Image 1 (cartoon, rainbow, N blue to C red):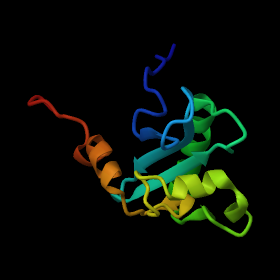
Image 2 (cartoon, helix red, strand yellow):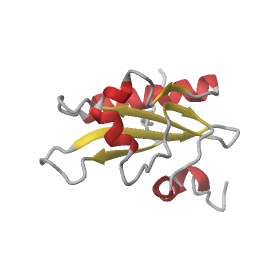
Image 3 (cartoon, rainbow, N blue to C red):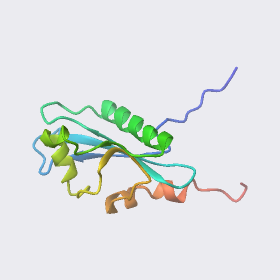
Image 4 (spheres, rainbow, N blue to C red):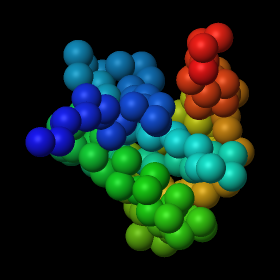
Length: 137
């Protein structure tokens, strides 16, 4: 009988959420960002953005952002330009692109070997430093 791992698929990534500025309601979340690092040391990013007319569900946001992260890491390239012709009409994409934590630095929903924002540099320390090893290892 095999042991079931207690490891969560999100254990090796960093997930953060963006909120409307200023918050329009108690549920002001409109985007989820998932960051990961591959064996070569390259950072990748997956982004899920909720339309302004819909209510954001964190579970669905995590799922989509994680899938986009995996796509970027697997293909080792950027996909899904954030502000393509169709999305320039979407208010949510513009809100995301201009958000204070993003400041125009994120150009793709699925990005490979990305440059981290200042905020992301802080929250990805666990991915950079790696797991803490004990003296017996």
